[in-house]
Image (cartoon, rainbow, N blue to C red; front, side, top):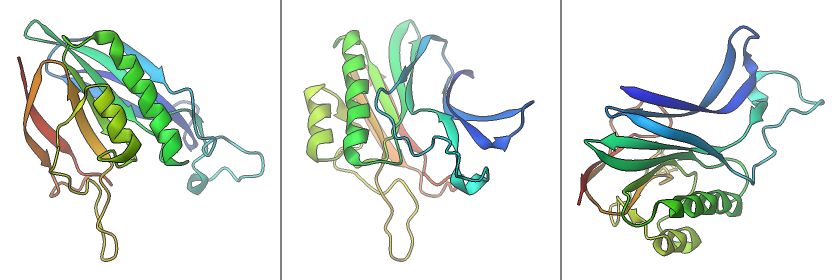
Length: 199
């Protein structure tokens, strides 16, 4: 596949000088990718930053960098499709996450209503109602899992799991077969998939 990687953080208590520990978002595509760019959010949590009084050990997860959205254009059989691969902050409050979401939606306005846009990722936020849902409606994005919300993280005896991973579309697209693949346990999130058709 074609791919592009955006570095979100460098983990300071992992890796080495010769091989730093980077993590972030990767977009994979069977089709050519172009015009990739990073939208690094203006508002960030300072939870991850190094502090002189913290020992340099993994449990403290000291990092440099910040949350972002990876934006790319895929050429799908001659048709441009814009993808936003985002990861909203896991620390901090919902107000911080909504501000990062607003930055993403404001950025997506540049493409207009005639370009298909796919916006997906780990939002660390339930966006099925409230202010976040209103922001998506105003931006004319559609929830690919409308009325089919199930937890996207594993649960436990006392915790049913959370719905924090999402796929939204805008422009001339039709979505079918939304699925949360709950039998795949390679992460602390379940994979999501949809089938897209372009008008």
